[in-house]
Length: 308
Image (cartoon, rainbow, N blue to C red):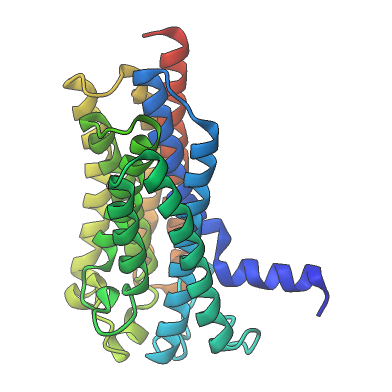
């Protein structure tokens, strides 16, 4: 296998497109810091991006490894581009041993950067980093297996919302912010929504593998209502934060994604039992997260430039 083919294979294994889950809140946290303080350290920002991407990479690889060990991915016949793992182990493209070692390697890289940022910017980064690495590893690893106990969706939302965004803000300012915490909630809710809707096609195999996600615990008929609530609360938090003066009024830009959310909810209602037919709703939910996060970041940059 040539270098380019090998690189493409590992990009598939890493599920690199999903790095947006941590890149978006990192960008937004730095944008809020700049808007409120005028501070932006590009070097620390780039290190933060690398650290969160490495944690995400380690988490994705570890999940593939442990979901293979539990056979949750192996028995999955309804996998999609957004669910069921990267499939590199199942297709015999990369051995499970290499996947596990790669997961440890990326976690180690994240730890090294985290230690430096903790030394340079403050001990709080160490605490955030420890939470991120441990929850990423034990998302599917024994004995905790968070994702198998019905809490994985909310943990991912917490990590990729408040934890990453507040951490990014702290790296820039060496302080925490109520504003950053509040605006991280809709970002985290959208990550929860992504994982949530992605688990509907996995319902049968997850149930067989005793992976008790929220979808397995509630059943698809009841669980689909939770998807609607996640989208509704996302936009309600943004509107409420603007009305209370916590975030700038230009953050209304994020509401441009409401029509996309309406379409995703409608498609989910029609296809939540239809396996691969749910893919359009899944892809739209990912787009809502990306676009909302970028629009919020742009709103802070524009508001800062206009000094409003």
